[in-house]
Length: 133
Image 1 (cartoon, helix red, strand yellow):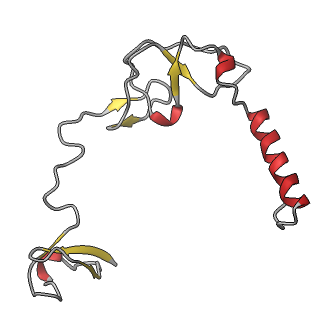
Image 2 (cartoon, one colour; image 1 turned 180 degrees about the horizontal axis):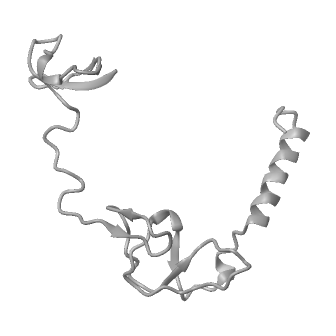
């Protein structure tokens, strides 16, 4: 089932989007008007954007951010040295770029700390009888 919007009253209706079915062929059940898609009339979110390649993972995307200052990743592997990237390089937001001038101890989240937090939460739930272990 998909959503469609009535062109006259604006109510949303379900329509069965089966193979070969077109929204143009259907009418609104409320006022027998033309149905349009839910995003009809809105400007495109990707209009005029160009694909860019992420500096870290190499994937192409239309929605990369460009940190205004030199940056490094928030989470990192302790076996490899931290690398500082120059300002303006494209990166996905899920890599969590942070300013390079921040010392590493300001961002203390490491895998070990998350494991400790998880273990504490499990102990707490078991002690209180919540049933989740």
